[in-house]
Length: 302
Image (tube, rainbow, N blue to C red; front, side, top):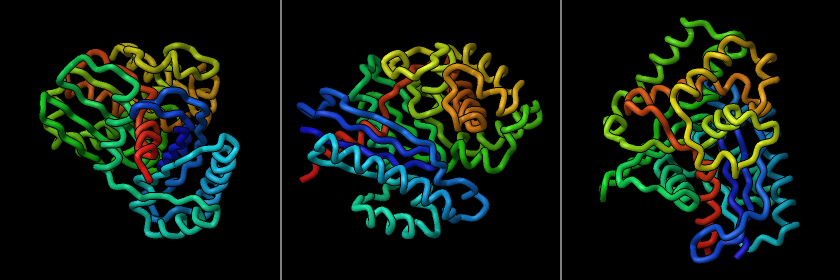
């Protein structure tokens, strides 16, 4: 069965078209993502800007045309943090209806469950105790498993929210790093399961971008990124390099996706804080995540 999954995030809209067989992704036909920053300046206004809405709907219209080209049987499209928190989320959803795209606004727990579905469909996890985390633009989802115990949590912190609050486009001072770390910890301190995790798996744009930078990829290749082990020392070295540059200089770094020049700083800090709490010296990067989970969920729809 040919399905499509669309993940409408605070920063990025992502599409995957795949053939699903026996509840697994058998073959990826097409995938794409566009940074539209739907949640830009949201932290200050609680509204989605008209410009951000238009950028995002135009990207979704292109995705819809691509889906028609590949003769998709079923699709499922979800909107996450930005739309569920915005005062004018309905305005965005109305425009989606105008292009004949039905969008489901999901809560943080369902987002975490779809992330688990996506990650485990593409990654073999040996440990019976692990933590998957998805650093998004407006929220960060956590899935902790210890034997039969499974916990889903969503924290309302994300890279776009931090980038709207602090200036990461300039060279980053030690003072700003410490201020950001302190704020990140206010969200993480209550998540006691983090320190119990034996294996860490990170998904979404921050870890995949860090993996691409580590590999010096001129062109992103998910097959090289997916399943890669990143050492904490490697991540710290990349962060140090990024902080010594401004956003314009960072554009020349191989592997850094255009549009992430400022977002990569808070995302990396979130990753490192989680690793510190878990006392982890390494983590596994998963290119598969909520988007793939959304596609697999589409296959179950009538």
